[in-house]
Image (tube, rainbow, N blue to C red; front, top):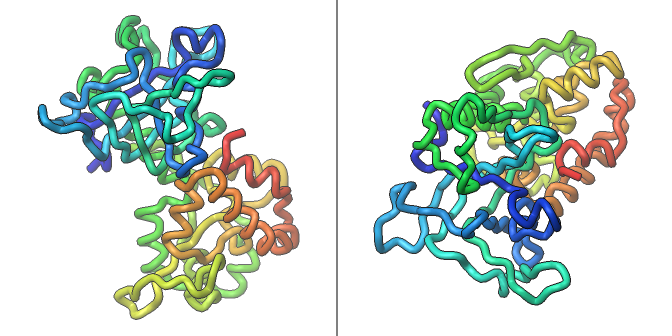
Length: 331
Protein backbone atom coordinates (compact mmCIF):
# COMPACT_ATOMS: atom_id res chain seq x y z
CA UNK A 1 0.00 0.00 0.00
CA UNK A 2 1.30 3.46 -0.89
CA UNK A 3 2.12 5.82 1.91
CA UNK A 4 0.86 8.74 -0.23
CA UNK A 5 -2.54 9.22 -1.83
CA UNK A 6 -3.03 10.71 -5.30
CA UNK A 7 -6.15 12.45 -3.98
CA UNK A 8 -3.94 14.58 -1.71
CA UNK A 9 -1.16 15.31 -4.18
CA UNK A 10 -0.29 18.27 -6.39
CA UNK A 11 2.54 18.90 -8.85
CA UNK A 12 3.70 22.53 -8.88
CA UNK A 13 5.74 23.78 -11.84
CA UNK A 14 8.49 26.28 -10.98
CA UNK A 15 10.56 28.62 -13.11
CA UNK A 16 7.72 30.05 -15.16
CA UNK A 17 6.59 33.58 -15.98
CA UNK A 18 8.82 36.43 -14.88
CA UNK A 19 11.02 33.96 -12.99
CA UNK A 20 12.52 32.70 -16.25
CA UNK A 21 13.41 36.24 -17.30
CA UNK A 22 14.58 37.79 -14.04
CA UNK A 23 15.15 34.84 -11.68
CA UNK A 24 13.20 36.68 -8.98
CA UNK A 25 9.77 35.06 -9.12
CA UNK A 26 7.98 34.46 -5.82
CA UNK A 27 8.80 30.74 -6.02
CA UNK A 28 12.46 31.73 -5.67
CA UNK A 29 12.18 30.78 -1.97
CA UNK A 30 10.28 27.50 -2.34
CA UNK A 31 13.27 25.17 -1.83
CA UNK A 32 15.01 27.20 0.86
CA UNK A 33 14.45 26.82 4.62
CA UNK A 34 12.95 29.94 6.13
CA UNK A 35 15.53 31.89 8.19
CA UNK A 36 12.95 32.68 10.89
CA UNK A 37 11.80 29.18 11.81
CA UNK A 38 13.50 26.71 9.45
CA UNK A 39 10.25 25.61 7.79
CA UNK A 40 9.66 25.58 4.03
CA UNK A 41 7.12 27.98 2.57
CA UNK A 42 6.04 27.55 -1.04
CA UNK A 43 4.44 29.87 -3.58
CA UNK A 44 2.40 28.30 -6.36
CA UNK A 45 2.58 30.28 -9.59
CA UNK A 46 0.79 31.97 -11.13
CA UNK A 47 -2.02 32.99 -8.77
CA UNK A 48 -0.17 31.77 -5.71
CA UNK A 49 -2.90 29.57 -4.25
CA UNK A 50 -4.11 26.00 -4.68
CA UNK A 51 -7.71 24.74 -4.70
CA UNK A 52 -7.78 22.83 -1.41
CA UNK A 53 -11.22 21.41 -2.17
CA UNK A 54 -9.41 19.10 -4.58
CA UNK A 55 -7.69 17.54 -1.54
CA UNK A 56 -10.95 16.97 0.33
CA UNK A 57 -11.11 20.20 2.34
CA UNK A 58 -14.56 21.48 3.33
CA UNK A 59 -15.94 24.85 2.29
CA UNK A 60 -15.23 26.30 5.73
CA UNK A 61 -11.67 24.95 6.02
CA UNK A 62 -8.92 27.56 5.79
CA UNK A 63 -6.26 24.90 5.19
CA UNK A 64 -5.69 21.16 4.85
CA UNK A 65 -2.78 19.05 6.13
CA UNK A 66 -0.81 16.04 4.87
CA UNK A 67 -0.68 17.05 1.21
CA UNK A 68 2.13 15.71 -0.99
CA UNK A 69 3.52 18.73 -2.87
CA UNK A 70 5.87 17.90 -5.75
CA UNK A 71 7.98 20.60 -7.40
CA UNK A 72 9.06 20.36 -11.04
CA UNK A 73 10.97 22.52 -13.50
CA UNK A 74 11.68 22.40 -17.23
CA UNK A 75 14.46 20.17 -18.47
CA UNK A 76 17.15 21.96 -20.41
CA UNK A 77 16.32 22.38 -24.12
CA UNK A 78 13.01 20.59 -23.64
CA UNK A 79 9.38 21.17 -22.73
CA UNK A 80 9.47 18.07 -20.52
CA UNK A 81 9.61 18.50 -16.74
CA UNK A 82 11.78 16.91 -14.07
CA UNK A 83 11.01 16.52 -10.38
CA UNK A 84 13.40 18.61 -8.27
CA UNK A 85 11.89 18.42 -4.76
CA UNK A 86 8.88 17.39 -2.72
CA UNK A 87 7.24 18.13 0.63
CA UNK A 88 5.85 14.84 2.00
CA UNK A 89 3.35 16.26 4.52
CA UNK A 90 2.58 19.87 3.70
CA UNK A 91 -0.13 22.19 4.94
CA UNK A 92 -1.87 23.99 2.07
CA UNK A 93 -3.83 27.19 2.73
CA UNK A 94 -6.97 28.23 0.89
CA UNK A 95 -5.78 31.83 0.61
CA UNK A 96 -2.32 33.30 0.16
CA UNK A 97 -0.48 34.02 3.41
CA UNK A 98 1.71 37.11 3.77
CA UNK A 99 5.42 36.40 4.05
CA UNK A 100 6.08 39.64 5.92
CA UNK A 101 6.48 38.02 9.35
CA UNK A 102 8.62 35.28 7.82
CA UNK A 103 11.13 37.76 6.41
CA UNK A 104 10.19 36.86 2.83
CA UNK A 105 10.84 39.88 0.64
CA UNK A 106 11.68 40.21 -3.02
CA UNK A 107 15.40 40.98 -3.56
CA UNK A 108 15.96 44.73 -3.59
CA UNK A 109 12.31 45.34 -2.72
CA UNK A 110 10.16 45.67 0.40
CA UNK A 111 7.30 43.72 -1.16
CA UNK A 112 6.59 40.60 0.93
CA UNK A 113 6.52 37.26 -0.88
CA UNK A 114 3.27 35.36 -0.31
CA UNK A 115 2.97 31.61 0.24
CA UNK A 116 0.23 29.00 0.40
CA UNK A 117 2.31 25.90 1.16
CA UNK A 118 3.92 25.25 4.57
CA UNK A 119 6.02 22.22 5.45
CA UNK A 120 8.36 21.02 8.18
CA UNK A 121 10.33 19.01 5.63
CA UNK A 122 11.43 19.34 2.02
CA UNK A 123 13.42 16.66 0.22
CA UNK A 124 15.60 18.27 -2.45
CA UNK A 125 16.28 16.01 -5.44
CA UNK A 126 18.26 18.45 -7.60
CA UNK A 127 21.47 16.46 -7.12
CA UNK A 128 19.84 13.05 -6.81
CA UNK A 129 19.67 10.11 -9.17
CA UNK A 130 17.64 8.76 -10.88
CA UNK A 131 15.75 11.77 -12.26
CA UNK A 132 12.00 11.46 -12.80
CA UNK A 133 10.98 13.03 -16.12
CA UNK A 134 7.40 13.92 -17.07
CA UNK A 135 7.21 13.55 -20.84
CA UNK A 136 4.46 15.89 -21.96
CA UNK A 137 3.94 14.05 -25.26
CA UNK A 138 2.52 11.11 -23.27
CA UNK A 139 -0.12 13.28 -21.61
CA UNK A 140 -0.95 16.76 -22.83
CA UNK A 141 1.21 19.72 -23.75
CA UNK A 142 -1.32 21.80 -21.81
CA UNK A 143 -0.97 19.84 -18.55
CA UNK A 144 1.00 22.70 -16.98
CA UNK A 145 -1.07 25.54 -18.43
CA UNK A 146 -1.93 26.60 -14.87
CA UNK A 147 1.59 25.70 -13.65
CA UNK A 148 0.20 22.86 -11.54
CA UNK A 149 -1.88 19.71 -11.82
CA UNK A 150 -3.59 17.61 -9.16
CA UNK A 151 -2.96 13.92 -8.64
CA UNK A 152 -6.49 12.90 -9.61
CA UNK A 153 -6.14 14.61 -13.02
CA UNK A 154 -3.44 12.21 -14.22
CA UNK A 155 -3.93 9.31 -11.84
CA UNK A 156 -1.58 6.80 -13.54
CA UNK A 157 1.20 9.39 -13.65
CA UNK A 158 0.52 10.29 -10.02
CA UNK A 159 1.00 6.65 -8.98
CA UNK A 160 4.31 6.54 -10.88
CA UNK A 161 5.46 9.71 -9.13
CA UNK A 162 4.41 8.32 -5.75
CA UNK A 163 6.35 5.10 -6.40
CA UNK A 164 9.41 7.16 -7.38
CA UNK A 165 9.20 9.32 -4.26
CA UNK A 166 8.78 6.32 -1.98
CA UNK A 167 11.78 4.76 -3.68
CA UNK A 168 13.89 7.88 -3.11
CA UNK A 169 12.89 7.90 0.56
CA UNK A 170 13.65 4.21 0.94
CA UNK A 171 16.99 4.42 -0.84
CA UNK A 172 18.42 6.46 2.01
CA UNK A 173 18.74 3.68 4.59
CA UNK A 174 15.16 2.55 4.01
CA UNK A 175 13.59 4.22 7.02
CA UNK A 176 10.87 1.57 7.26
CA UNK A 177 11.32 -2.04 6.14
CA UNK A 178 15.11 -2.05 6.40
CA UNK A 179 15.07 -0.84 10.00
CA UNK A 180 12.58 -3.58 10.89
CA UNK A 181 14.98 -6.10 9.37
CA UNK A 182 17.79 -4.61 11.46
CA UNK A 183 15.82 -5.11 14.67
CA UNK A 184 15.12 -8.77 13.83
CA UNK A 185 18.67 -9.54 12.64
CA UNK A 186 21.52 -11.17 14.54
CA UNK A 187 25.01 -9.62 14.60
CA UNK A 188 27.58 -10.94 12.13
CA UNK A 189 30.86 -12.58 13.13
CA UNK A 190 34.08 -10.58 13.56
CA UNK A 191 35.43 -12.05 10.31
CA UNK A 192 32.32 -10.94 8.41
CA UNK A 193 32.71 -7.47 9.92
CA UNK A 194 36.32 -7.23 8.77
CA UNK A 195 35.46 -8.23 5.20
CA UNK A 196 32.18 -6.35 4.84
CA UNK A 197 33.67 -3.59 2.67
CA UNK A 198 35.12 -6.12 0.22
CA UNK A 199 31.79 -7.60 -0.82
CA UNK A 200 30.56 -6.98 -4.34
CA UNK A 201 27.78 -4.40 -4.58
CA UNK A 202 24.42 -5.92 -5.48
CA UNK A 203 21.24 -4.07 -6.40
CA UNK A 204 17.64 -5.10 -6.79
CA UNK A 205 14.67 -3.62 -8.67
CA UNK A 206 11.15 -3.31 -7.31
CA UNK A 207 7.99 -1.21 -7.57
CA UNK A 208 9.82 1.74 -5.97
CA UNK A 209 12.83 1.52 -8.30
CA UNK A 210 16.38 0.27 -7.89
CA UNK A 211 17.91 -0.17 -4.43
CA UNK A 212 21.10 -1.58 -2.92
CA UNK A 213 20.96 -5.00 -1.28
CA UNK A 214 22.00 -4.25 2.30
CA UNK A 215 22.88 -6.75 5.04
CA UNK A 216 20.82 -5.74 8.10
CA UNK A 217 23.05 -7.91 10.33
CA UNK A 218 25.91 -5.45 9.77
CA UNK A 219 23.84 -2.59 11.15
CA UNK A 220 22.71 -4.78 14.05
CA UNK A 221 26.37 -5.49 14.87
CA UNK A 222 27.11 -1.77 15.02
CA UNK A 223 24.12 -1.12 17.27
CA UNK A 224 25.06 -3.97 19.64
CA UNK A 225 28.68 -2.83 19.87
CA UNK A 226 27.53 0.73 20.62
CA UNK A 227 25.67 -0.58 23.66
CA UNK A 228 22.38 0.46 22.04
CA UNK A 229 23.38 4.13 22.25
CA UNK A 230 23.09 7.01 19.82
CA UNK A 231 26.40 8.13 18.32
CA UNK A 232 25.25 11.76 18.38
CA UNK A 233 24.50 11.75 22.10
CA UNK A 234 24.62 8.63 24.27
CA UNK A 235 21.99 10.12 26.57
CA UNK A 236 19.28 10.14 23.88
CA UNK A 237 16.42 8.02 25.16
CA UNK A 238 14.08 6.01 22.94
CA UNK A 239 12.02 2.98 24.02
CA UNK A 240 12.37 -0.72 24.72
CA UNK A 241 11.91 -3.16 21.83
CA UNK A 242 10.11 -6.49 22.17
CA UNK A 243 13.54 -8.01 22.80
CA UNK A 244 14.01 -5.72 25.79
CA UNK A 245 16.67 -3.64 24.01
CA UNK A 246 16.85 0.13 23.67
CA UNK A 247 15.62 0.94 20.14
CA UNK A 248 18.33 2.31 17.84
CA UNK A 249 18.66 2.43 14.06
CA UNK A 250 21.51 1.82 11.65
CA UNK A 251 22.46 4.74 9.41
CA UNK A 252 24.86 4.65 6.45
CA UNK A 253 27.00 7.77 6.71
CA UNK A 254 27.69 7.68 2.97
CA UNK A 255 24.05 7.25 1.89
CA UNK A 256 23.58 3.75 0.51
CA UNK A 257 21.95 4.67 -2.79
CA UNK A 258 22.66 2.77 -6.03
CA UNK A 259 24.50 5.77 -7.45
CA UNK A 260 26.76 6.18 -4.42
CA UNK A 261 27.36 2.42 -4.16
CA UNK A 262 28.50 2.21 -7.78
CA UNK A 263 30.65 5.35 -7.51
CA UNK A 264 32.60 4.09 -4.48
CA UNK A 265 32.93 0.58 -5.86
CA UNK A 266 34.44 2.00 -9.06
CA UNK A 267 36.60 4.59 -7.28
CA UNK A 268 37.77 2.71 -4.18
CA UNK A 269 36.80 -0.89 -4.88
CA UNK A 270 34.66 -0.94 -1.74
CA UNK A 271 31.08 -1.65 -0.73
CA UNK A 272 29.59 1.22 1.30
CA UNK A 273 27.26 -1.26 3.04
CA UNK A 274 30.01 -2.01 5.54
CA UNK A 275 30.63 -1.80 9.28
CA UNK A 276 32.84 1.29 8.94
CA UNK A 277 30.12 3.26 7.12
CA UNK A 278 27.28 2.43 9.52
CA UNK A 279 26.53 4.21 12.80
CA UNK A 280 24.06 3.54 15.60
CA UNK A 281 21.65 6.45 15.81
CA UNK A 282 18.37 7.24 17.58
CA UNK A 283 15.25 7.63 15.39
CA UNK A 284 14.97 11.37 16.11
CA UNK A 285 18.52 12.10 14.95
CA UNK A 286 18.02 9.73 12.02
CA UNK A 287 14.95 11.61 10.77
CA UNK A 288 16.71 14.93 11.34
CA UNK A 289 19.67 13.96 9.15
CA UNK A 290 17.29 12.91 6.35
CA UNK A 291 14.51 15.47 6.64
CA UNK A 292 15.88 18.35 8.71
CA UNK A 293 16.72 21.81 7.38
CA UNK A 294 20.17 22.31 5.86
CA UNK A 295 21.74 23.75 9.03
CA UNK A 296 20.55 20.74 11.05
CA UNK A 297 21.84 18.30 8.45
CA UNK A 298 25.19 20.06 8.25
CA UNK A 299 25.76 19.94 12.01
CA UNK A 300 24.87 16.24 12.22
CA UNK A 301 26.94 15.24 9.17
CA UNK A 302 30.00 17.10 10.47
CA UNK A 303 29.69 15.38 13.85
CA UNK A 304 29.36 11.94 12.27
CA UNK A 305 32.19 12.55 9.80
CA UNK A 306 34.58 13.56 12.58
CA UNK A 307 33.80 10.35 14.45
CA UNK A 308 33.93 8.00 11.44
CA UNK A 309 36.63 9.58 9.26
CA UNK A 310 39.48 7.37 10.49
CA UNK A 311 37.41 4.19 10.18
CA UNK A 312 36.44 5.07 6.61
CA UNK A 313 40.05 5.78 5.67
CA UNK A 314 41.32 2.56 7.29
CA UNK A 315 38.98 0.45 5.18
CA UNK A 316 39.78 2.40 1.99
CA UNK A 317 36.72 4.61 1.61
CA UNK A 318 37.99 8.05 0.62
CA UNK A 319 35.66 11.01 1.06
CA UNK A 320 36.16 14.57 2.33
CA UNK A 321 33.79 16.38 4.66
CA UNK A 322 32.73 18.69 1.82
CA UNK A 323 32.02 15.75 -0.48
CA UNK A 324 29.94 14.06 2.20
CA UNK A 325 27.96 17.23 2.89
CA UNK A 326 27.19 17.51 -0.83
CA UNK A 327 25.45 14.11 -0.66
CA UNK A 328 23.00 15.48 1.93
CA UNK A 329 22.62 19.15 1.00
CA UNK A 330 21.91 20.45 -2.48
CA UNK A 331 24.46 23.09 -3.49
